[in-house]
Length: 166
Image (cartoon, rainbow, N blue to C red):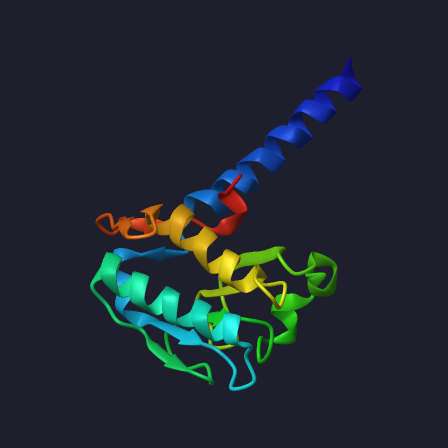
């Protein structure tokens, strides 16, 4: 009986830690104007396309047009692609194991500049573009209904950490 109680208590503690992380947003509406897209000069055509799609849809939803640069800066850096992403952000990623279509999408509470960060990466052929689309759908609610019709919602009050996504 004591062993069962210990397991239940440990599970409850883990759930509360996960819930606290999930309740803390990655970004709030007050942060949306501080987003900066970082895409390397050596990015593939698909990665460059993904960066432009992110920028355009971020602006349509939030009303803020993020700067696109090959270097991180102040504010919330959104790294798109593989090159130039800080090594600590990719420590857990097996990018080569993703194939051409797999995605790596992860939020971070703090990047090298102490601000929240986001990495949208994946397979070189299409994976990064898919990661951008996944983020835009899950975090911002963008929906591609037909090739010529896209639903652009109002900006959410906050965006959850990717750890809270299932």
